[in-house]
Length: 127
Image 1 (cartoon, one colour):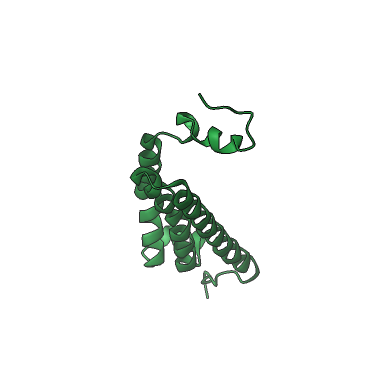
Image 2 (cartoon, one colour):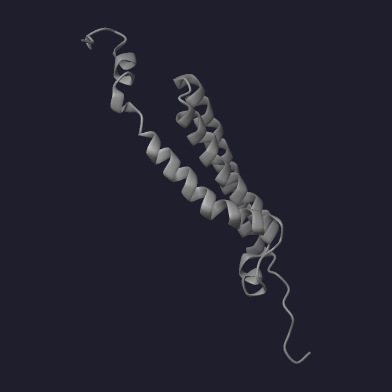
């Protein structure tokens, strides 16, 4: 039995078997991101978007790169947990994943903000 009255009780709490989510959830998250965000990000980064969506998503390529940065969070966070890596490695990968997600959100925000001040040129009817 673990004595929680010791000064190092936080380490004892981390040893609890329910302190980590089951690996099944890691696989579900990784699969769902791989089936949704990855193809959308790759298509947008390659500038392969249908014409009817192009105007709403403009500029397409920077948004695609932003989605890929956000997607990169999923494997960086999930794979160390699935592989059973040490808590230090898992924590480091979580920090890197957070930085990637933040970078993706910043790129997406800057892209959206730039579009508001510099709208995409459209052709005029009857000119």
